[in-house]
Amino acid sequence: MRLIAFISFCAFLLLAGAVFGQAPQYTIQDLGTLPNMQACSATAISQSGNVAGWCTSQVSQNLVIDAPSSHVFLYSKGTMTDLNITSLVSPFPTAINNANTVAGGTLNADLESDTLSASPFLYENGAIHVLPGQLEAALPVALNDAGQMAGTVLQANSNVANFFIDTSAFIDQLSSGTITQLSTLGSGVAFGMNSQGEVAGAIISANASLFVPVLWQDDALVMLPLLTGYRQGVATAVNDSGVAAGVAFNLVFTELNDPNAASHAVMFSNGAVTDLGVLSNDTYSEATGINHAGTVVGFSTTQPPNFALHLQAYAAAPSSNYHAFIYTNGKMYDLTRQLVNGAGWQLSYATQINDAGQIVGAGLFEQGNATVEHAFLLTPVPVPTVNFVAGAGLSAPLVTSISPNGLITIFGSNFTTSPAAALGANDITDNQLPSNLANTCVESGTSKWGLFFVSGTQINVLAGDLPASGTVPLTVVANCGTADEMPGPTVNVPVAAVAPEFLYFVNYPNGPNPVAAIEPNGANVGPAGLISGGTFTPAKAGDVLTAFGVGWGATASSAPIGTLATGAATLSSSYSLTLGGMPVNVAYAGLTPYFAGLYQIDFTVPAGLAAGNQPLVLTVGGVASPAGAYVTVGN
Image (cartoon, rainbow, N blue to C red):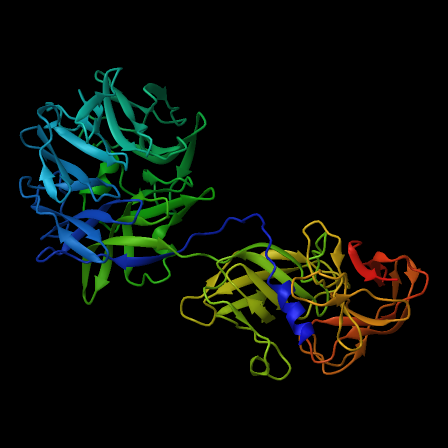
């Protein structure tokens, strides 16, 4: 029982490490519809996960061009509520904050008369509020939790193909009603804002209709670079680090449909612009949102940009030739392909992402024999991530190679939500540890290895068959054996014939560490008071001790690699042991019977050692155990 207790203590030690990049995965939630409103889109999400969007009674509607009757909804705690914004014909929300303040407006274009109308709305404290006269033609685009609202005042223009000629960007401090105009060079347009009140947008040359991407930061206008090959650009969103997402484009606004139009989603950071590219088989893309981690969302498509730019995602119905994307770890992913429960969905637009990684937008969903247009909420699935792998002794320094019958510890994150240990007879079948514990597996190629212990951040695993040298791939699979299996990124771990180390009563990050050693009667060997509540006695000359370890390599055992030892089995490689630098008489060195991956060495403490902590070094096949191991010797 003492041995089991000390092995369990070592197994639960946690260390930190670096995280590898991985492909994101998400669960999708259909937000449903309002009564008699069959087509819905989600356009805004708060940091707390509440969602705003719109619904209409007809499919395939564009709120700007078709001007159908639309209803704005607030989705919170599983319930979709109609905000009853009846004063506007085709309203759509663009922003929501944690107080459930919702802002948005209308953009109605009459292509026959070449006229444009714009009207704002603000839903705050459960009621619709009238904005001051100077904002009566505004389109609010962003809210933060400091009570600031950013947007753009639009001016009617005979050239309806450009909403943004003669416009001015602003910030409205809602609590005081103070409105600050941001535009200082020609027309200005705001598209996004962070929690600090920094605004993303563009300034516009009225004569040339050219957009130049900018940030308004601390009352200063920061010009952002244009992407090579593109004459124009806008910043559509900005995070709290001042990193912005946006669109680089070529578009002649005097033409309703420019045959030479082009666009690519971009990211602006540290004075540079990065082309985010497009999804496979697409030609154009636009970015709509960014969070604190620098993860960008938007859409990729075969359709060239039009005068609505990225607002296409806010006001247009989802379509099969638009594809929602996420850009993370330097790569663009099709969000539809990243769903773990998304059968029947095609995601068209991703409009916003919050700092928790939740994403909202609109997509097509196969329902019976019909295709419906629904709003969605994506929640990231925690992917099991391996930070590093070490011998289970957790020596200082760590042993980083695996050997036959090696007991190793994997550290990382998102392994399971239900910690479990395999320490009882009910967990063992045919002398084998379970290969699936707490719905978690560790795979090496096509093999699953036996597990001792699994928590959210740590796995203790017994290595199976290994090659003679090189590396072996290791993959942690969460939800193993279920329909929602989640494999993490594979890591390659070096292999060695032997990787000897001792186990310890206490692991100090920088060592030295007291070796787990016992007397024949089971008494613990160590300095008094080593562990609170435990009894420890220093060793004396002539005492016969048993010390335990892992990674000592092949033995004479006939049991298959990766199983419990059925009896004693001596080491196959040559070995030697020293205590305090003195050679030690060894009675047995090999597997501990009826344990998996556990080795022991029985030896006699030599005479002539000074009292104190004496280094214990085991050398197997020419490889020495880490130098920080010690046994306490008394007078």
